[in-house]
Structures are given as C-alpha cells and as structure tokens.
Image 1: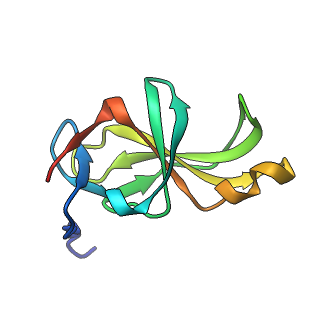
Image 2: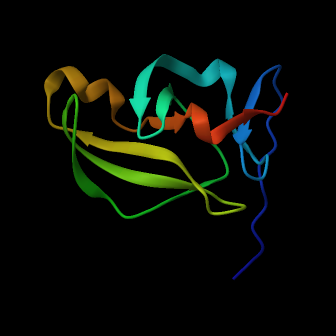
Length: 110
C-alpha cells in the first residue's frame, strides 16, 4: 500500500476538521447552509477533500429515506458528516453525491 497525502485547498475561506485542522471543504463549494445534523447546524457541500466514507446504510431522516455514508476525517478519523448516495423522494434527488459537514465539527482554517 502506498502513502496517502492530504489535499490542501487554496481559497479565502477553508473549513477544516475541528480536531486536527485538516482541510475538508472550500467555502465556495457550499450549496446550502439550511441543514441540520446530529450536532446542530450543517452545510451541504458540492465537494469535500481528505475524508474517508464508511459503508452505505439506509437512514430515515427528517426529509425522508436516504442511503448515506458517514464521512470521517482522513487524518484523525473523527466523524465530520455524511455523504448522500441515494434519495428516494424525487424532491430530494439534488442531494445525491453531495456531502454534509456539521458546523460543530468544523473550524475555519483560513
């Protein structure tokens, strides 16, 4: 197995893991700030970096049933949010392939 390297984002506002400050998301990739997670406020991102996705599971959420994967910081393994694999409601299909990062688990790196 080869070495894995972290991706370092180059942006004016970068969100990182609150635990280890590893870069996770670019402020410009936020699609919506109108989400809630287990820890409160959460953001829907188009793309994230330096995460590892867990196995897909069916989860009943406030907006209906979804297939999601928890995502963990690649550096410290802390759970930072989840990825939407599949939405069963037509109105929720826009979430597929997108990521939720929970604000409480993030810090502003830059």
